[in-house]
Length: 157
Image (cartoon, rainbow, N blue to C red; front, side, top):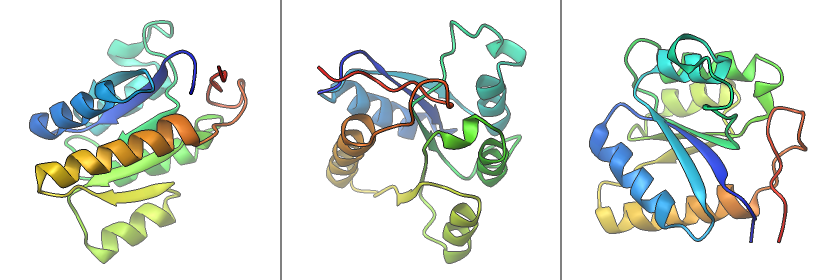
């Protein structure tokens, strides 16, 4: 089990979806600290420490980003492309978490270097199971790059 908190950036404009994701992540056995932004511009401001997110200590680099596609201001694919074309942020895993199952969205996400594409189920029990599985994979089992390369590797207990 990982020691310390895993930082997650949740980019989600639907408040109900965001609350469900945050609830499941905080119930996960691996302690996580979730930062939630509601549009693509806020996501970029957070990641580049601009605008209201300029305090680096207050807004740590996440170990994983959960990114919706349909976002106000800057669309999710553009956020994905921008981050994946910016070193050292390009090494941070980005999971597209969306309601869209359209082939063109899936192809665009993977062409833009998404690490995973997950369709949110409408059924709350299935959504809970999905978040549990995502939590174990991305918060506990996945090994991020070593510190100094875009993310902070968490120590093992």
